[in-house]
Length: 107
Image 1 (cartoon, rainbow, N blue to C red):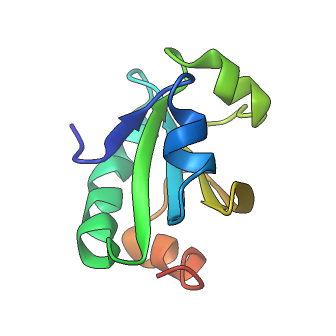
Image 2: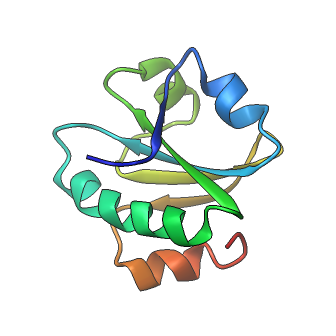
Image 3: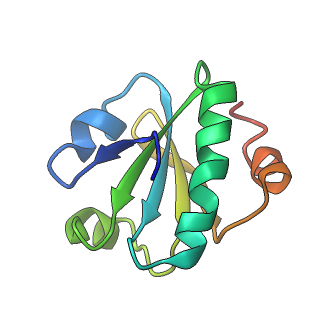
């Protein structure tokens, strides 16, 4: 599926909010076609820009508490966290060039 590290309700605080790095969280679900479409694009961005941004995945079906806390109503939802705060939200699958443009400030 993806090379991105999976995070959960239990690990979200340590893996994302307490991280020194800039983290992009891909909120996704197994049944979501656009989520599957965007996964390889995120893997490419991670391999090209992994020194600047870390990409992790959170399955919204398996981790409803975090999804509810961040009001995830549409997936894929990509949220960039810096210093424990959401600094950017991207909703929906996009081509690589559009995602890179949205993430330009971080990569």
